[in-house]
Length: 114
Length: 112
Image 1: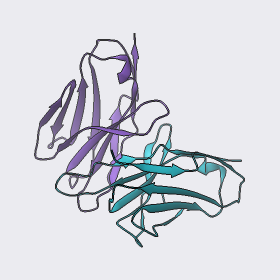
Image 2: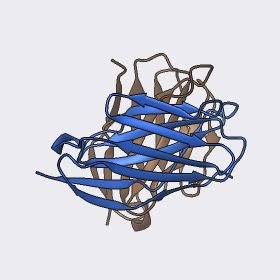
Image 3: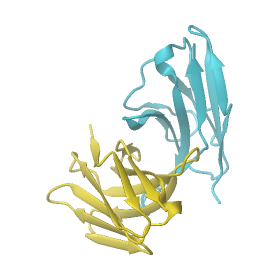
Image 4: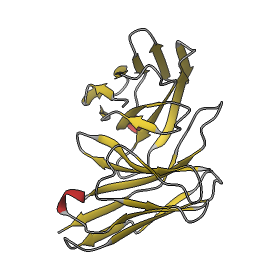
């Protein structure tokens, strides 16, 4: 079974503070993704990565940075958190190819910015 | 970029009934369409997929239909059970980019 783990699972942050959400995968997948889930919007792609050292902007990258220091780890960084970034964040890993791009998701990180 | 729309946004049916969830996309370069299920408080899990060179795929109580001309998909779930209560997401991918774009989700509630 593919394994993607996120930490922290729950976080309350103050406006203007720095938040780092971490993701670890043991699938040896090249690609990793960060999405946020909000009611009425489904999942929206923030940043993604093709491998260690690579980060790409998704559809809503403003206010977020990403870091992929290794094959296994992918972090999402909010340098100056704002209340509009209150959401549930999901990390996923996958490998596109002839078999498609089935993603394996973590359990989510619930972030509240006050 | 790609946009994926799902209808309806929510659905309530009696146990045993069949349901249909519709999905449309905009980018003709999308070639792979996986669907995911999210039970309350849980992670998303893959349930079924289809490629653009196919018209139909079936697994157990799920049937996925694909119309390339109209850029439309529909997921049919038969003989619904309480465990089918979840949010269902349609998604689309261009293999070259390897990223999935998701629809807004359809919340399905099954009444016992």
